[in-house]
Amino acid sequence: MKHIRYYLLLLTSILAFSSCKKEKTFEHDSSSPVVIDRFTPATGGAGTEVLIYGSNFSPDTSRITVTVNGVKAYVEGVVEDRLLIVVPRKAGTGKITVTIDGQAGISKEDFGYQTSYVVSTLAGNGSAGYADGKGAAAAFNFGNRCGLDIDADGNLYVAEAENRRIRKVAPDGTVTTLAGSGKNEYAEGKGTAASFYLPLDVVVDKAGNVFTSDPAAWTIRKITPDGTTSLVGWMEAWGIGIDKRDGTLYYTDARSNGSVFKVKPDGSAEQIITGLSYPSDVTVDSKGNLFVVVNGSSVIQEYKYGTWEKGVTIGQAGVTGLVNGAAGTARFEYPWAIAADANDNLYVAGNGTWDGSSVNTNQCIRLITTGTWQVSTYSGGSTAGFADGTGAAALFYAPTGITIGKDGTAYVVDRKNNRIRKVIAE
Picture 1 (cartoon, rainbow, N blue to C red):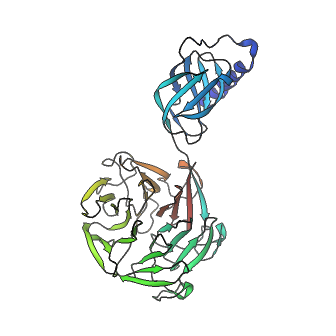
Picture 2 (cartoon, rainbow, N blue to C red; picture 1 turned 30 degrees about the horizontal axis):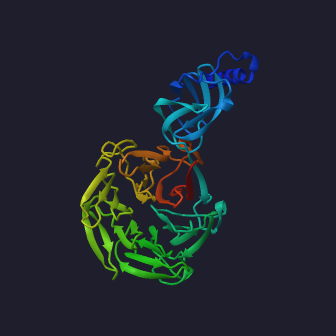
């Protein structure tokens, strides 16, 4: 509170100085450089007030332009050696530049921009049940570690294990049933004429066809946009991934000595990677490389396209926790699902314990930046619960499914909260 009061008092003083014409005691010297000595705080998000210390400023704020990483900031006030600004949205990390009458001073250090991630509830009322409807009028009962995917129009498709259905969620949060009767059986058909045992994960191809794994039925099924199901092949698929370039399917079997398989056009499966501890999910980047969630080892493992040779290992095998940082020092705790965005950044749904344990430290979505393989917490934290909000204020309870829209919005199956959550960067 002392810091808040200090900055409020300082702001009031600065604005009083800048608005009082008679009190001006300094002027900008056009023959001398504009100098930035330092600024505080060094990091922050949109709306953060930053106090810049320097020299040769101007008392006339209309002559001053300040940018953060090239994005124009709002100048709140100025006194002789201090300039107060507000960080703009989506500025990014970079230098602070103060320009007066075309003369620029640039900070020696970067301002560390922190993106704000806002979590909201797209659909679901939090109670386990079954109901189509919009937003909170809809009800889900996941009951297991379920996944979801998104089509080109922004519609979500969600595997719902306990209700034995595939649900469709429109961009406005309207939930309908694409396929599934709710009966515990195997049957092909259209819409509610079809039946599943344990639909667990889904992917969508370019044409809008949905493919779902059903490990209890040992099947991968195809569902056309009108809800008609058909058999792709008999296989023990848990997590499922798709190469968007050509529609090739891959799946994991989640066994203790588990494997990754490639689905052939004839519906048979080719085992391409072996010896993994409970591999739970797989995603494919824009080059065809596979990233596999090895749930039992708590790592994310890359495999190079075509040769399937090991690439980078992200996380520490057999060492659990919520630790961000470089690939070799970061820690996960039994992660479950993974998705890639348009830039090949990876997003990991953290809590893949069989019962969605509240003591799992990864009640969150983790971000892995492509190329550098730095791991950070994208949204949520270590505490299980339910709360919409920004950054660490948002709470999840056993997030198990993740997909990314073409605009970068993340969608999450929040298993124990029986909701679909939406995460928007600012």
